Image (tube, rainbow, N blue to C red; front, side, top):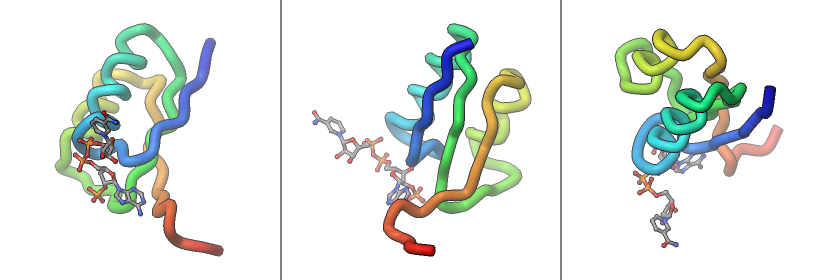
Length: 62
Ligand SMILES: NC(=O)c1ccc[n+]([C@@H]2O[C@H](COP(=O)([O-])OP(=O)(O)OC[C@H]3O[C@@H](n4cnc5c(N)ncnc54)[C@H](OP(=O)(O)O)[C@@H]3O)[C@@H](O)[C@H]2O)c1
């Protein structure tokens, strides 16, 4: 199975890309700053088990 990493996954182009890849059977690493229980990304994951949601702020250093 192919894998894609997408940041900014909760809205806009990121959310649409996740949908497109998931529909094609890809394993999707979906990252967003705020993991919320009611937003569109969470609803999408319920339909596509190959999508995983992870917390990521690309400007935060650890
Ligand atoms: N070159 C082109 O022709 C072209 C065309 C269209 C878009 N773009 C670019 O493509 C990008 C996405 O466009 P869009 O319309 O989907 O924008 P958008 O709807 O504003 O979404 C931006 C996404 O980036 C996330 N984000 C912002 N700062 C972040 C950070 N520090 N760490 C992690 N995630 C962060 C946002 O998360 P939050 O919800 O947490 O803010 C949101 O998910 C933009 O940079 C836009 O300028 C380029």
